[in-house]
Image 1: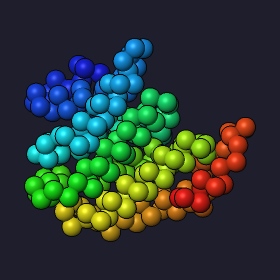
Image 2: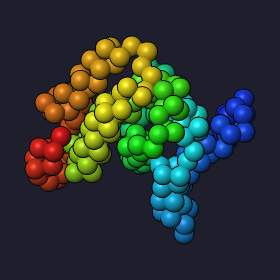
Image 3: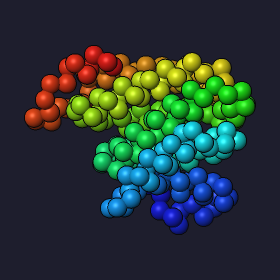
Image 4: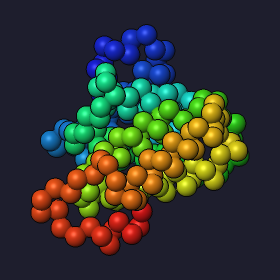
Length: 193
């Protein structure tokens, strides 16, 4: 995650959105869970559509920090929690059918952000929780494709091919998922994918 000093070059609104997103993984002993829930709902349902381009760019900047310089994923609980909240937020934003949202969705491309999220989730172990996250991500991809005419794509075919590659990798149970010992039976949940 970004530290407070790393976003000094951004305008105050961008800094605010970045700080708001950091609260999605607030671990305050007493209020952390409430803060996370309220921030998630606020960003998902109450944020002005004019801020969507900034939101998308800030999400991308944060999720890209979940990869080391060689592009390897750093899977830790905080990162996974952040990605899970972002999936909910993005799905809510894309499912918001209010007319004035359409013009702001296409201002910036979400390709890099979505691919980074999918790359991260792709490396989660095959646990019940991870399968729930993957199912939610598939629903997000479905919502994104339903709104594709309102979104900006730089290289749509390349993006689609990469998404199909990553998603089929999960469904086929291919490369990056190792079921930890004692993970229980996850086959019923896998069918949802």
